[in-house]
Figure 1: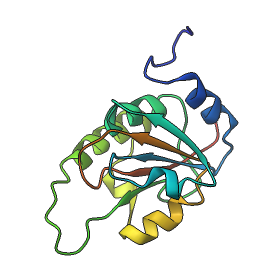
Figure 2: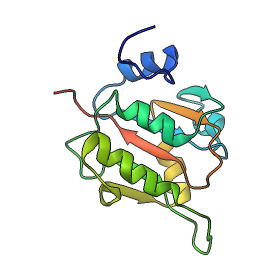
Figure 3: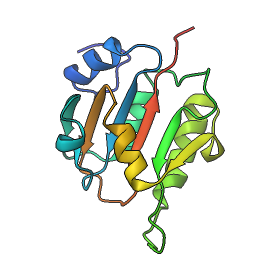
Figure 4: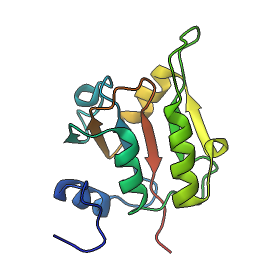
Amino acid sequence: MLKGIPTIIPPVLLKVLCEMGHGDEIVIADGNFPSESVGKDAIVIRMDGHGVPEVLDAVLSLIPLDQYVEKPVCLMDRVKGDNADVSIWKTYDKLLNKHEGKSLDDVQMLERFEFYDRAKSAYAVIATSERSQYANVILKKGCVL
């Protein structure tokens, strides 16, 4: 056990976050995301039983976002005509503000397949059991100053 590390963070995720360098990206995926196939060239970390918001909160408490890009966070935008509930984004807005002083205005919205393509180059993918649709997040790691 370590002091100051959120208890939700398993050792393998702590190791991955430490290994990541400036500009590396990590995906926090909902339960419907094809984590294993999209992450076949990445490190896939299973966090079954947890949702994206609690994982996002813990990860943002440990790593800074890239301060040298305009939008260091990406979300998968709703498919045109899909009326899925995206109220989870309000939670992301609060977490971004809490940890980085940012909001959804600082988030890049990517079309579904653009998001998948971007996620394929991520350093790691965290697979959660999140049931909300369009809950996937990509974070670009910054520098610890």
